[in-house]
Image (cartoon, rainbow, N blue to C red; front, side, top):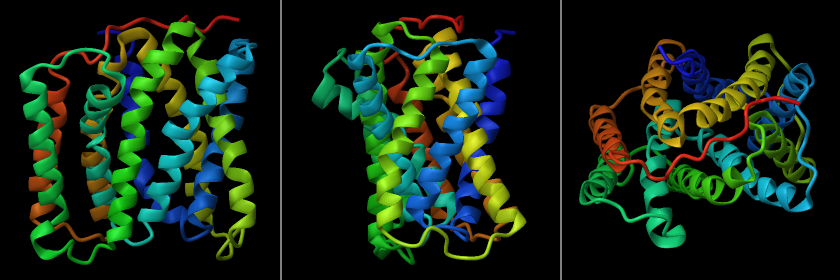
Length: 301
C-alpha cells in the first residue's frame, strides 16, 4: 500500500470533523475569531513540526508573497466564510457545499489560468455538479430555512479554494519548497492577515469558555490547520494534487455522521441527493488530471 494512504486517512478524518469543531467553536468566539485562532494554532503546530524535522523557512520575498496570496485563498478567506456561514446553516450543508471545490477549480482553470484543455467529460461533470448544488440548497423552495448570505458565503469559500488550487500549482509548486515550510508560511500569513480584523470587529469571545468549546477550537487549529494541512502538502508532494483533492469526497460523509449523531442536525431528503450529484460531478471533473504533477522537495533541512 502506498505510504501516502497512511497520511490520507487521518487527514480525511480530521478535515471531515472540522465542520463539527467549527460549530462548537462558534459558541466561544466570533466567526473571525474561529478563523484567526484556527490559523494561529495551526501555525504554532506547524512550527513544532518544522523544528522537529529541521525544515527551514523560505528566504526570498517573492516566495513569501506568493505563499501569502495562497494563504488568503486557501485559509484566511474560506475559514472566515465557513465560520460565518455555520452561524446560520448546518455543518452538514457546509460540508456538502465544500465538496464543490473541484467544480470551481475547473472553472478557475478554464476562465483564468487556462492551464490545460479539459475533456468533455470534465465539463459534463461541472454541469452535473452545479445541478447538484441547486438540489442540495433546495432552490425550488427559496433556500428553505437557510440564510441566503450564508449560502453565498459557502459558495464564495469554495470559489476561493477553487482559485487557490491552480494558484498553488502555477506559482508555488515550481518553487520546489519543502511541503512543511509551504504549509507553515500559508497558515502563519493567514493568521497575520486575520489578527487586525479579529481585534477590530467585535468581542474576542462571546461566551465563557467550556471544555468542549475550547477543546474544539484547539483541535480545529492544531489538527485541522496544523497536522492535516501538513499531511495534505505531504500527499501533494508524494502523489499529486489530484489524489490529495479526493478528500473532498470523504468530508460530507464524516460531517454528516457527526452532524446527525452529535449535533442533532436535520437532514432533508434533497441534501444527500444533491450531495451525490455534487460528488459525481467533482469526480468527473477530475477524471483526467487537472495538472501535470511536479513534485515538491521532501522534508529535509
